[in-house]
Length: 243
Image (cartoon, rainbow, N blue to C red; front, top):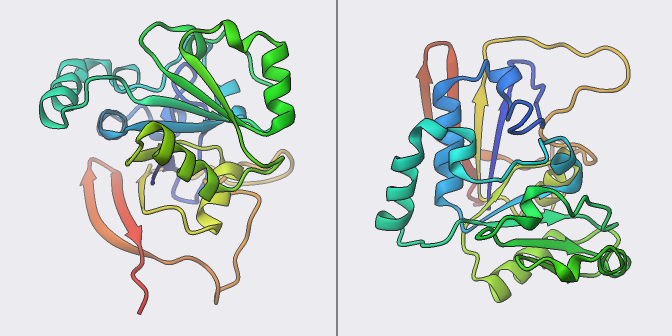
């Protein structure tokens, strides 16, 4: 699984994807950051977000490559179909233990876009009562909850949907659980040349929330590549090899 985020120098991250910013308020809508994000989307079998992150996007947003970098639409399409031999858009995955999502959003009703809602049993009951069964391209799977184990999500995606490469786009609590459970293989992080600071509530988020690590238990990462363009840094990390 891959995580992809953009942060300030002091670690403040934007989760207002697409219709609001896709991190653009922090990256300055940096061209290279948008291209990398689109390339990761074009590479993935599935793209995952939590319901909180979904609610911060524009209702018409889809988590596909050309929505974040439309000028590279043809390049992404060629790469996905000719190089990767993937004929369909990536599966859209929304994780919501409660099942409280707006089923009128484009992600649930757009023809040709397949969407999976992963929820707990109570969430499934609510979704059924809300009419999810009438949505031709949206499916629901319930797992043990209310806090759904990351490993269970990954196993579901592999076994039932053939997902080998999952792109995780947040939010911080959901991503934090994946990190804490050792379920993240790579992290792509763009560092933008600004300082945001922190003061009082509500707190400005990092890309992980809801978990914290001691020095002796904190996950470590191996640097895979460092690139720079202008004043931005584009960092790629892999999970550190033990031993």
